Amino acid sequence: MPSPDVPAGLDKGVTPETALQVRRAIYSHDPLTVSDMELVFATARKAGRQPCPEWTAVFCDALTDYMVHQNDPPDYIPQNKADWLTATLAKNGGVCSRSEFEMLIDVMTHALAVPTSLSTFALNEIKTAIISGRRDAIGGEDHPPGTATKADVEALRAVLYAAKTGSAGHVTRDDAEVLFEIAHAVSKADPAFDDLFARAVGNYLMAINLHAPDAAEALHLEKWLDEKENLGGFLSRMVRRSTTASSFNVFKSPAEAFEADMARQDANDRAARYESEKITDSEATWVIAHLTRDGALSSAEQRLLQFLQAEATSIAPALRAVIDKASLGADSSRRPQDQNIFGQFQSRTSAR
Image 1: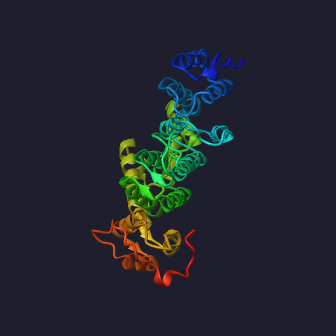
Image 2 (image 1 turned 60 degrees about the horizontal axis):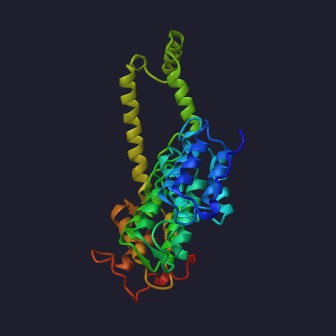
Image 3 (image 1 turned 120 degrees about the vertical axis):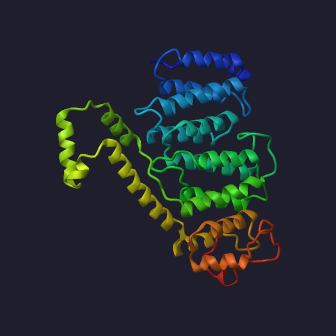
């Protein structure tokens, strides 16, 4: 299908009428095509850093439909589309307008599975905006570099807990590394940043990585559910079950079998959660290596240590010594200005 024409008069900016014209052009057929996306991005480049709301709505709708809903199965973003989107955004120097940022968050929050490369790209774009002080791509006006606003915190939260492919609500090591880079760079942050930082890094260290089905598994499940029951299939499944179950279990109702499976899974999850909530020697080394070493800990780092002290079932001795030396308590949110907590740890791995 030929590409829709780029609307005339874009040199004067993108108006609500332009947004309507583009919407009609790309949705005049089904499905959306790469040519449609080229038109959308060509128009977006002319919309400016603070486009009209009508254009932002068209931009988000089009990219979310193409990236998320227009797949088999729907709502699972394939890697090739994630690569295409990050390359297209990077070609213009990264996220450069509010509509592009809102689109990126819209795409990720509407998907059931997001490739980690896309979430990492989004997280790094937020980090760049915070460190550089270029705020208007996320929301609000530009302000001095190194300031994390409330809007930044909410953007970080949306990206960190997006439904990443292969896991559910799990913060990755790459995510945690970026958060430490932000914590080291900011001189002023919204109060919510410290708690998000602590809980997100704590999630990486202690949360069990609950498996989330990928697109192939979802397709398999859909096919299984669509198949009609037949006697041969029923008998075949009973024979397979009989090799691992007692004769009594073979004749359990589906509901009873489901309940038994869930009970076993719950028990396994409890055991895995207990083990995951231990801070091991290697995890302790990683945390220590990332803490501020040339002065006082930041309030975010103090909140992390406080969180680990409260939530971990056990903490490796090296990190326990750091926590004890930091004297965390009820007033630990205050930043001591003359205390370096490392002492004997100063010669260990450098923080950054």
